Amino acid sequence: MTETAIEVSDLRKSYGPVEAVRGVSFAVERGEVFGLLGPNGAGKTTTVEILEGYRERSGGHVAVLGHDPQKRSRELQQRVGIVLQSCGFYPQLTVNEAVAHAAKAYPHPRQTRETVALVGLEASSDVRTKQLSGGQQRRLDLALALVGDPELVFLDEPTTGFDPAARRLAWNAIRALKDMGKTVVLTTHYLDEAQTLADRVAIIKEGAIVASGPPSDLGPGSAGYRVSYLSGGSRIEHQTEDPTDLLHRLTGDAIARGERLEGIEVARPSLEDVYMQLTAEEHVATTGEGS
Amino acid sequence: MSPAGLAWAQFRLERKLFWRNPSAAFFNFGLPLLLLVLVASVFASKPDELDVLIPGVAGMSVMATTFNAMAYNVTFRRDQGLLKRALTTPVPLGSYFAGFLGNAVANAFVQVGLVVVIGHLAFGVDWPKDWGELVVFTAVGVASFGALGIALAQAIPNFDSTAAYVNLIFLPAILISGVFYSTDSLPSVLDFIARALPLKHVIDGFTGAIVTGQGLADNAGALAVVALWGVAGIVLAFRSFRWE
Image 1 (spheres, each protein chain N blue to C red):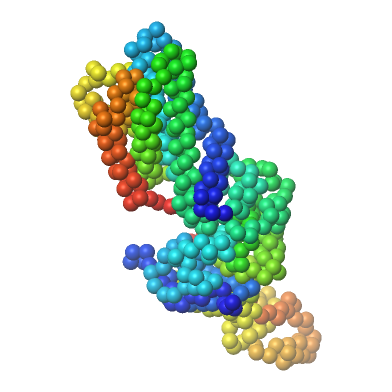
Image 2 (image 1 turned 120 degrees about the vertical axis):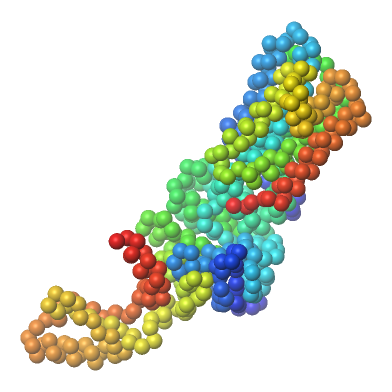
């Protein structure tokens, strides 16, 4: 059995003259949580929908658990769980009925009761799906993706529109998947989500990957630390490879002057800094709109 | 589970969904039967009128349970993302659609059966003279109207406008095709339109099967028109099908 769950090389997708995905390459190892991060319209959803077999690619090579997803083979579909954006339910079914029906398509499904509990919907198991709240519906989505006990799970923006409590629940469910040894591909535009959950992330912008690696390694190559403090009401910032030496000097100078270093902070550039830098145009465009 | 087993599971699910949806159950079952009983009560003493009404309502039922129901259901499922979901599960699409369409087929046959039984028991109309013809016209009508309903769904922009699109076709069709009254004296333009559309021909076939005993050979032309519409519906449905 191969250790690579997904291999993508030079993936391309055009809609007419518009190239939504332009030569994306990455690999996802078995058992890892892989995050595809990017602003809206960057090509994340198109990319995962190609991996899910929902869309056909225009070019490049894709292997998912050794299969070409475009062929939509039943064997592959039985090993993969998919949470698409904006998929509905049969409104007249209860949560239990919806999960039990979905289970029939898989060779070794999870128990309905266990699956419903896994996503925290036990209390609503006899409620009709049309009466569920938005967050509960997304959890049912997850239950339908997990009932077949898949090896690989695709989650397309699983927490968009969640309140903080629902978000935390969803995060726990995703961590539980990782603990079960599942491979998870997650798209999100929330940085904290990618930073918290993903072993590795790829940042996608305008249909191309602009950075990839473990979230903690995605800082800029030089000037790894940022040291800042308040002076005369404004924040002074230094960048340094060696914060020990810089801090020693700064504190030494302050003590010599008989002052305090107010609001001193030492920070590694976060994924957020990298992301903001890499997706700067969108950021400027957004703030421009708001003002 | 085998593809056939999954088709059966989908069929069972569709039956459950149907009976739990009051408006579907009303428009598919309740309304045609209500109209049958009310109009037949008016004409109870006029056997000639009943001979028009029973095959007419049977034809209308075939259209309501397939054409109308498919246009509603396909549009609803597309809007709700249920068709998209169907693509992401390991259920073969053949099984999914077999169960989905099987539900409409079952509704149509049950409804035609109910119309015939009520006509006989409540209003003294004779049992059909040609059961085989009744089944053939029901089957071809179901296939044709079902395909046309799926094709129509592709032209409907969203679920909210479905009722307008469906009734714009359904209501004039039942009024000019001789469901409630004989259309012998219909203005020639309307008669021409009615003869170009499939419903009148389904009703003609039912009239032969239930009332006059005219066999399939005599109604081969009518059957051909219904089948041709069916082929057109299948081609249109396949070529323009939208999953989302």
